[in-house]
Amino acid sequence: MFEKDSLDATDDDLYRAKANALLRRLKESKWIDIEDRDQYRQFVVLPHYSSRILSVLQELCEGRSIEYQRYAFSTYQLLTGEEAKQNPCFAVQEAEKMTRSFLEELQILVNNMKKHMEQLTSMSTIEEVLDYHFNRS
Image 1 (spheres, rainbow, N blue to C red):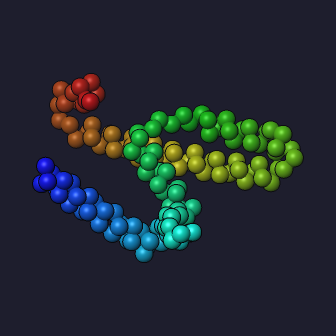
Image 2 (cartoon, rainbow, N blue to C red):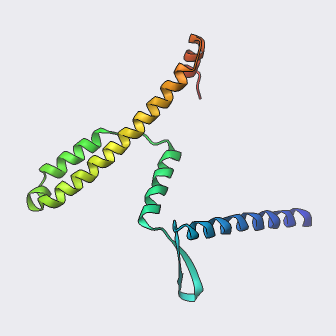
């Protein structure tokens, strides 16, 4: 029993050391900020560029599906809604942001399609192609 507890403690120390090294490296490279707050507690603060990159990485890991028509619909609503009549400058700026996001998503889609086509063209038999499409998990 004592040996198992000491192994768990050793594993915990190893993981803690790795996490601390990662946090120090992220702080040195300015990907995170660490704030000291009351009672000497430290909090990790993400700059805006870090949170955006982390959200993109999370979306990639989740294998999310994109509904491209929502970009067009949102842009249309921004440009034709009541907000556009009251504050046209804001509406155009937001529509531009939405359009840029849409273009980024389309670029990701094109890159994924290229990768998929490269995989297919590297196959030499029809059986490999059919297996790729139908027996893939």
